[in-house]
Image (cartoon, rainbow, N blue to C red):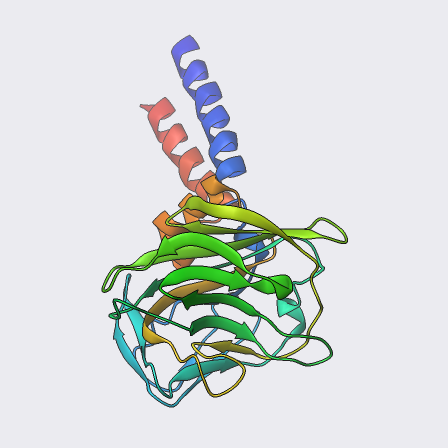
Length: 258
């Protein structure tokens, strides 16, 4: 009897530990595009917030880092996402933009990954590659990673913004590791729509593949970025703490009964 009681106590402790730590930012996802549709001209926002995106120009479906993804031709292809209240992240607290990216270009230059347009404020280039270097131009200035992309190599990139009142900090993570120095930036609000794979003008078209892009209303920690990179968007969304609790409790009861 004592052994069974110990198993129950241990099981309950494990449940609470796993529940507390599993995908702590799951409910902070405000927009997520897995790009797994494989056909059509719309990519659906799997967050449930309705931030669907429309393909334009030279964008084709291809194999990605995980499942399907979108391949951009570098001359006309891009994706547009209308502005929505759920995507109003600047000056609302910390936030994170993350995605898997790859280019076949050994000398990639002036290519946008994620851009906001001007409307009721100044839109910015949240993530780009200039001179093969991964960087951000949020807050009106460069945040450099010091990491230069190699051709045909996948990179998991995250731009993490930590709210600081008048001045925020911007840090770039490459494959889950903080790279380059963080920068201090004053953020300007904007309600402009968003572009994946193009600058504001008809320039800076991405050449390569983009997969699993997500916006999160939280400045993710390294552990959380590792979780996202390892499990992917659907892996984060699929495991709910209450579901995990039920499964584990059922396993515990079966073990005790035996």
